[in-house]
Every structure is written in structure tokens, then in C-alpha cells.
Amino acid sequence: MNKEQWLTLGETLFGQDTMQWKFKCPCCGHIASVQDYKKAGAPSSAAGFSCVGRWMPVCKEAFDNKDKRKIPCNYAGGGLIQINPVDVDGIKVFEFGV
Image 1 (cartoon, one colour):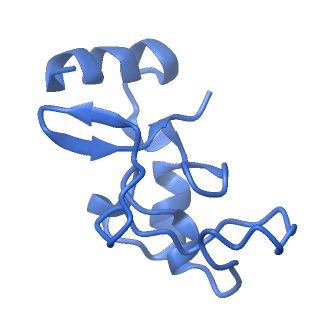
Image 2 (image 1 turned 90 degrees about the horizontal axis):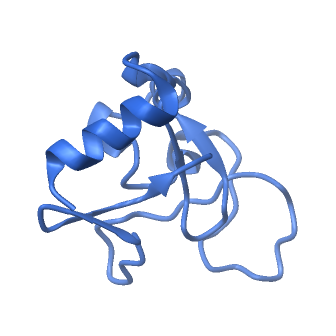
């Protein structure tokens, strides 16, 4: 999908306020809004690319299937294992969290 299509989809799902847009981590399934990323102290470029858990005081390890806590993980979209499912003009991002 191209950037314009992706932006249109985001607006359709969440409205024009991008701070309310939500993304689902492909590793742990946690859904966080851009506002949640900002509140955690993450850079704006992290939303939809790495799990918000990376910037929280408590998170679980990415790909740890033994840790059953319902908290976000520390998955990084730019790491060795890239599982971000959506391609926007060649950049892999998280799917929207609906």
C-alpha cells in the first residue's frame, strides 16, 4: 500500500487526530495509541514500528512465549527479526489496532 492509502485508512479508522491512532504489536498483540507512545517517552518515529513496551518501566521480552503477563513487550521493528506485517511504500509497520 502507498502512504496516501495508509493515511486514508488511518483517518477512516481513528479520525484526523493522529495521536488517537492505534497500532498492534505483531509480537505480543498489545495495542497502543500514538498518545501512549508519547506518554511512555518514546520518539514519535517508534509508534507503529516498535512495541511501546520498550519505553515502559516494566515489559516482557519479545518472543517469550512462557511469559503470560498481559503487558507490552520490548520488540523492535528494526531488529534482526522483522515481523512488522504492513508494507507502506517499502517500510514495514504494525497493523492498525482495531
